[in-house]
View 1 (cartoon, rainbow, N blue to C red):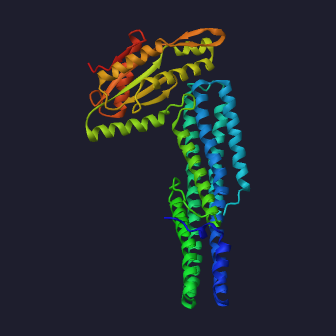
View 2 (cartoon, rainbow, N blue to C red):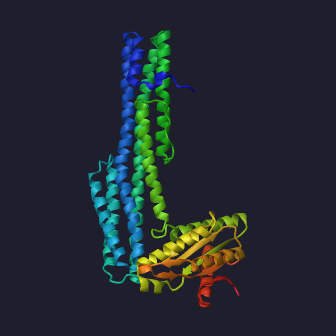
View 3 (tube, rainbow, N blue to C red):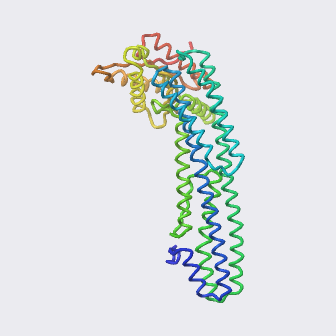
Length: 434
């Protein structure tokens, strides 16, 4: 539909044009409608600005907490002093981020209370962190592992509390929307009065003005409602270049910023910081989904468990930085060989896992041999031009042939991996029940 040129003028100009064709009474009524509309716009702008002010620092805190989480696991896995320094630095950044929230103008007392609760959970976890950092050699320490579980529980609780604040913020937007809607009803009443006392020319001007205002208002109302429901991918599309168009741009910018932050947080929570592959928790979730899908639709799938041979020797000889680079190279080579539907994860340390949907054990063994051969033939250049040759051992198991649950499937693949190690390494072995 072609938009009249009038829609590209400001709201003030439209009111002026309408008022020029009306009697004194109609001018007064039109002015009242204009100020009511300005109040509606103000309510929307306030909701958008308040949402950005409140949620931006909270997103920073969530991101820092997740980075602390990942850094803690890296430190407890490798015990590298640099990883410890990074861990300590991230803890300090999170402390500062929580302190900065004291200056955020939260609209609700409940939001402030939740922020304090999230900070308390962080501080409880902070106490546990200090105990962990006090241990000279935390790697493999069962007491530290127990403390780490308590620490992660406090981090998860803090993240859950921050999520509650998001829900309250969305609720605030809905309340602002209700206020704007009440103002809009008053505006409709004024416009109805204009219809009652106007003449033909006045009716035409009023109809044109209503169409130019109410349609954008409806779109803005719908957008605010969908934002409140969590649909941050929605965008307001207005053909106007007036105040409502500017408001739509503000709402779109807010939604885009929130969507990017949410996507970044979600991706950070499921990825391994070193290799960029899925982390162990995400692997467990996806493996469970694949087991349920196979039970529901039939068929089978396979699981590969890969482990770098003599990886400890590499770390001891060349250092953990070279060891990290080796893991990154392994991840790259594996991803080149698998299909887009296959799911690769870092299971822990130097061990990787690959879920192969709709793949038999024999087909998985072929892929395992290909991956093993590619890695074995890949020369990795380390410090001072030295070349490092790496090999891997791979275990293969299939569902439902070798297991009845995801736990049994992991155990079967681990047994096959152990058999490959026991047989001399640099080989792939299929699980054998007998």
